[in-house]
Length: 195
Image (cartoon, rainbow, N blue to C red; front, side):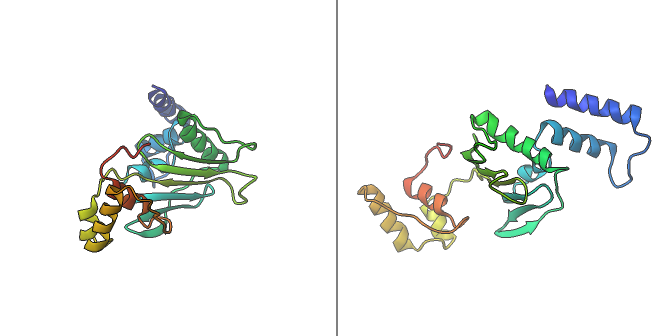
């Protein structure tokens, strides 16, 4: 309802008070961007909707990077200000019962879809608010998939399956985006990743 109300108000303001819209943007695009920034997730909305984006990294309001197919690239997307970015961070963490402010300037959380977020605001960061969203792909891979993708050898997969069956302790380590969580869930079989 709030989005519809914001869309109607924006349309009204544009029609009554703006004489000419720049040629590089249509009226529909302008309305969509204004509504996204005021009540939605702003510059993040198209990136979250893009299935090829696996991670979004925001380093201040004017530098938004994405990871696609293992490559990190700077996007042309940006927020209008650090204050706008702070508003988006608040809209992300509030529904999951978390808060971020000067007394608690860092949040690590998991969204309802399984995506992981990390947000840091000043005074902990010097370049403006930062936000990382590691998107949950929704694709459940099993051990056979990991072997087929040459992530594990057949022998490694069998060893992990035996360790799980015998309830042995297992340490899975690696760098960011290296597949630790995927390997863990493939080892354990299907289960709810949002927990």
